Length: 125
Image 1 (cartoon, rainbow, N blue to C red):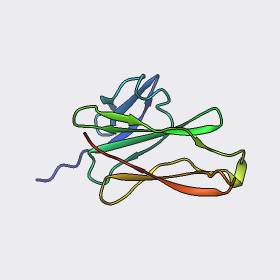
Image 2: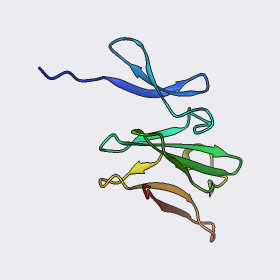
Image 3: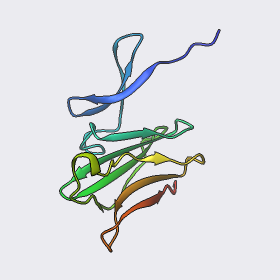
Image 4: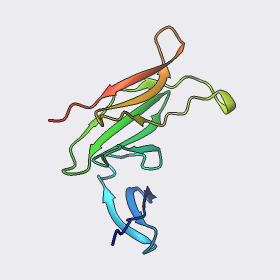
């Protein structure tokens, strides 16, 4: 019989956690508060489930952490200008994985002050 694990990734206090919907409890944690200083940010799980990305803002920039779930190896992006847009014209910083599980697409403001999409390539050690 096939059993689906219905789990959500979310924030509990300062931690990025796994919550089991059926058990109604936290069943795991991703990284540490040092790795994910803003666990309530925009998140995305890679299509193969092996990688996790967390995006959050710091000042006038969006920053992204990519975390390998198997061993906790992670990398942190440089800040991307998030612009001063708000309301209906804001830029949603949610990372989006490609199908090959080796890059995320993220928005930002380019040097010429236009909205652009940027690719962050994941190079695994």
